[in-house]
Image 1 (cartoon, rainbow, N blue to C red):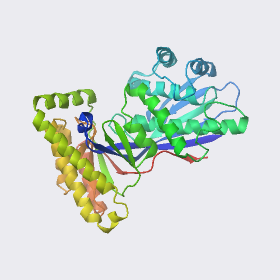
Image 2: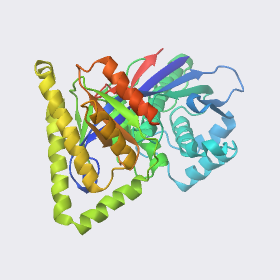
Image 3: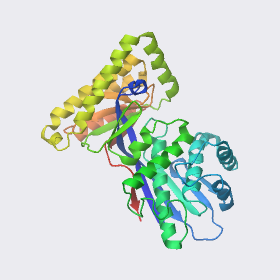
Image 4: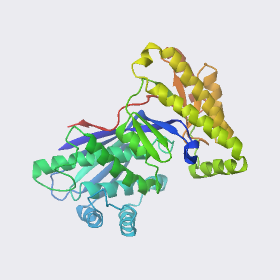
Length: 390
């Protein structure tokens, strides 16, 4: 009895920071994934085992420990409260017992989210959950949402399998929209809601953008707190470069807000220009079949938008010397780049034109890696979460 799900990360294409002030932004599902595999145990006495392959970390809990949490959580996503004092206290107790290595203490909230989602959805069922990811952590690429979405989809699928095979009943086991190898629209909505609950443990007050993009895939437009899913996409490829520079998102957002107060008219003009870029991005990304008939022309437009957007972000004060180095390096090869996410470090995206020779791309990557950066090639606007293994 095994299931596996994978969920993409997310990339902000345009509108960073302006979206905080009520303007539009556009995000796309990123072709780098988190994979969650669940193997049900039928051996009496087995508990719950979490294997985080990329961190080389294995954690285990007895069924009695899981049951103590099951009694505090709720299997209905509409009323489940992951941040209630009782639930948080029990989650901390279950984590404190494991004595996480100091070098890995940063993943504590991720483990707490795992425990909450597992106990809420699957309950007191023994299994081994194995997680691996292409996504770097803490780089603004939606790694935590990708983790939550892939975990929830696999848990819901296992709940269905367990119910049909052993007549056990638990959360949505008979009608949750998630079958062994298929997730329908209702199931996706349920996955998204549960993943958001997990994100609240990780981030306190998440926007919902990351888990929505990871669940449904493709492209999402955001404005004034409203999320609009855009189903169509085009085969645009990017190079992602991780600066490996940590950043404080909260401080960066606050800094832009303070600059907007000091220079209201100027910053309003910058935000409006950023929104115009976002709207043009959305139009281009929805060209569908028309994209192929004018591919080079549309790619050139996208590259110009990326270059303009980076200039505006720099004017907001959220660039960084490492980001500028990457932009200058890619410019040597006539490629256009911009920061993605909060800035101040994190990742930089570079548009890869369809006709760019592999030899040239390898030179770009080699140049960046020699300077200590980490590079990933990926598609954008990919489909969302899906079950991949029976």
